[in-house]
Image (cartoon, rainbow, N blue to C red):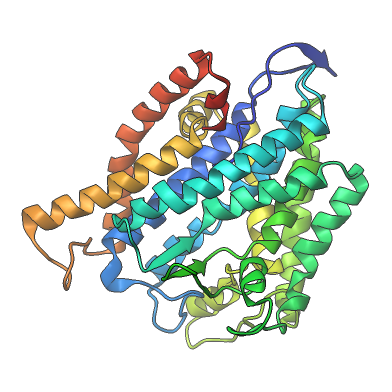
Length: 394
């Protein structure tokens, strides 16, 4: 997942030690990791009641809808913290600034792309020759890092402008369609239009996470890096102001219902389903409204974690301190657990083994989180003690 937001203790600016690991960042990453765990439990144990994307307001139960909605926070926070972590990495004392961040982003981005095509895809399919290769969040983070490796050389105001233009303006490109067989179809499918790409050796690739909006999110994450050195109260004010500003703009755009998401909301027969319609935002690619809502909530959550009880922050930070390790072990763990359930108890939901209701998904995720917490704590220690430079890419 995103690059570690750790910088070694070395100096103090404005009363805050630059270099201490910022536990609130790890805690926020840990929080969204747990929401991701619930959503992936849904993928493995609720196949009999899968939802379309965007979610069907008329047929999806509120419990399943809001469970899925909670997971929408994950990708935007991961990508924004990727940018933030890159700034913190490049600005370690004596590290080299933008040049150091750029080199790290390029190498780790390539590593993540390779990981998506190998270990991550295998975790989902348990097939060495899948008919479809899914290009999902690790792919998007990797390519965003590669793009950000070039963007970090921009002056900070220009980088902010680029990020905002992409995040808020990319929906203007929604009418652009490049159908299969036309020149540029594969490129457009990668950048903005979720679709299938025929592979030269057979099979297809599915661009589940079109890239362009995520580049904007990563750029904005990098641009706010300077907030995380210096005076803590100023950082909190900026986070709260940014979060509230994003949510206010989301409310305005969603009320107008003309721009910000390709799926307008409509009044439904039940009030709860009207709320669901308003919150039924497009994730693939993430619309301007989707990113305003999730990044706004993410900024406020980060501010809240700055002042949250130390014990809670510490528990969450264990997950957030080893995010890529967690991502891999939880996918393999859920898949193996599902196969074990099928072998021991047989199919109990159609042709597969699944949970009987949404509450079971949350309970299952809570159970799986416990061994993952201990595994992440162990791996973080191994990584911290390792003398090998390549360990920082994990």
